[in-house]
Length: 226
Image (cartoon, rainbow, N blue to C red):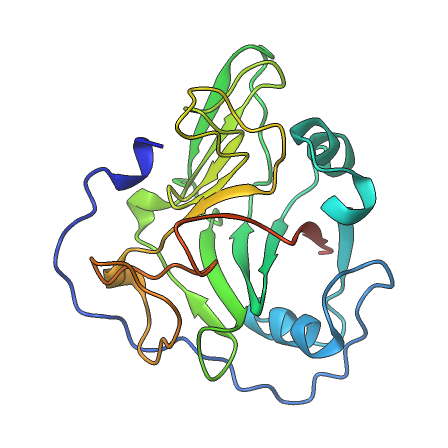
């Protein structure tokens, strides 16, 4: 992948930890989610919700299939969305307020920058990286979603969230992987809150999946019911 390492190598200090200390929200996870009760409660807390803020699980690779088409068929135009990635002990993902906006042309691609009021893209860790579930803010100019049409690829992948979480990564091929669980991920060191204990690369960037490239154990997409 070439688009992920462009223009962000600027020295900045790590941001203060965006940790959420849970307050016993008494939330119940949807029956078809891969998240544990504590992980689900943590996610609701990071979203700023309460016990009346449910999420609905729309798609799981282990249930609905592992292709890009499987994801699109089950998620559709729903929004806001939460993408959850599980790999070994790590549980992390991204919040995307505007959902998946497919291009009109199935052979094209869309690039949506989060510029309008209320639009938001950010990352989070639920397990394996910090002492507490933690929100990871990214700069406004990085808040974007690059989406391939059903018959195309977004720079050798299916979807790129914020420039640093990539699904269906086909590198070194210029075509996406057949399996959406083929991921490429790093978080620029300047975005990583204090207290991070996970794996880093030589540039001190955080590798939330434990390595730069990996095959996720599970990818899940949930909708925030508003």
